[in-house]
Image 1 (cartoon, rainbow, N blue to C red):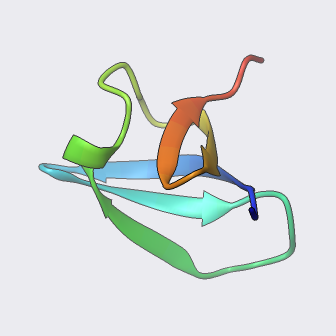
Image 2: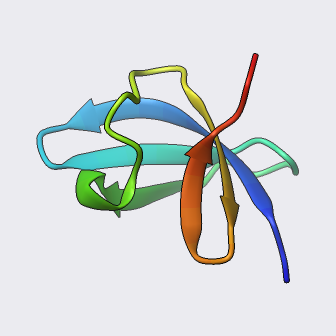
Length: 58
C-alpha cells in the first residue's frame, strides 16, 4: 500500500488545501476537513495511508 506525506497549506471553511511533501509537487489537493484529523492547523504535516490521514509527529 502506498503512503504519502502532505502539509496543510491553508484551510478554507470545510476544506483544506494539502501539498505533497514526500516528493516534488506544486499541485495542491483539496480535501474535505471531515476526512482529516480535527486538530489540524495550517502547517500541520499529515501521513496518508490505508485511506486515512493521521498527524505526523514533529
